[in-house]
Image (cartoon, rainbow, N blue to C red; front, side):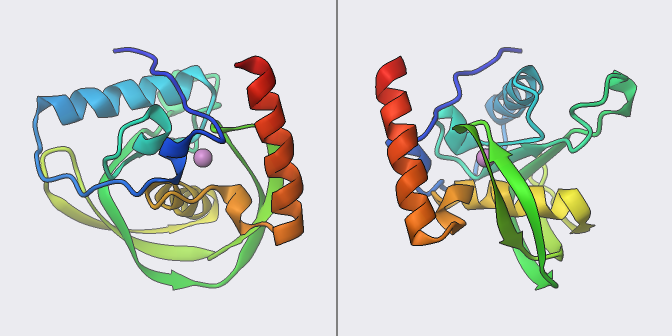
Length: 172
Ligand code: NI
């Protein structure tokens, strides 16, 4: 397993739409394992393939990523995930491994039903609420080239994107 490079704003790969996965092979499992490693390595609770430069509809999530006791971890792998039902509204603070040192409040659906495939291609459906539901919406956005900062007001977006672009130029 390996820790992969995480692309950050304004890298163009983050604005692209990921493609549906049709091949369920060892390579897919290896990518999912490496993405989990990368997520834990950077103390994230979710990671989409776009963020490691791969345009495939693959997401990994573990809302217990920060637990000191590793036995409490709950890694999830979602292939071709799709939200089929949404309910309610909730506002919470979000951050992202691809948006360096910036958090902001984002409005999301409170609960949802998700359809997805596992790494052998079997279809599943789950209900999610709380942090898992928020995280799923954030990660699925990545697959469509959307970042959480794209949900802010146009003025806030302008300010933060300018700042992030400046920072990225400095560290390049
Ligand atoms: Ni993110």
